[in-house]
Length: 177
Image: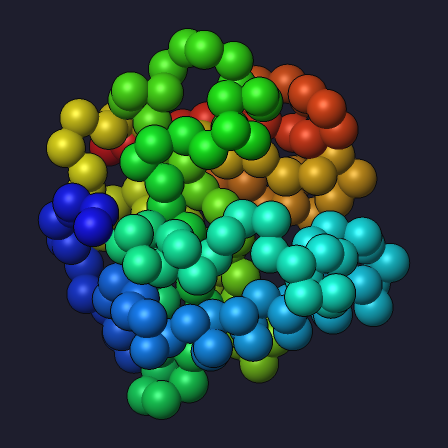
């Protein structure tokens, strides 16, 4: 299991945060699939593998490892995020050999479309920065597909430093406070 300290148990005064359990797997996969469907409707191919039932990020295994966190408002799954303390092969390919020991990797940030425009996405990212701590980890890394300028703008607006483009993906990094 992932070792962490939860500093904040809720965001936006109404959305509760906790580590996902195996019982959350179906809801998490449903949210990811719905997000992929929405992305597809917007002309994006991002996360298209989910539409054919393939999860290249191994979300079910990540839940078992303790790397997935869920955000609920009542019984509604409002959002989820995967936080890896150890880089995946994907992360190593994008980032090279440096900085992994001190980094947390953000993957699969997904927001329930019913919460679009509610600042939930930025609140989740602020929680990633300040609401949870991992021993020895003082920077956050993430990537987004090069063509998704909305995400580029989103991460830039949150103070993430653009570290370049590799293999068609923008790389972002931010030191934790």
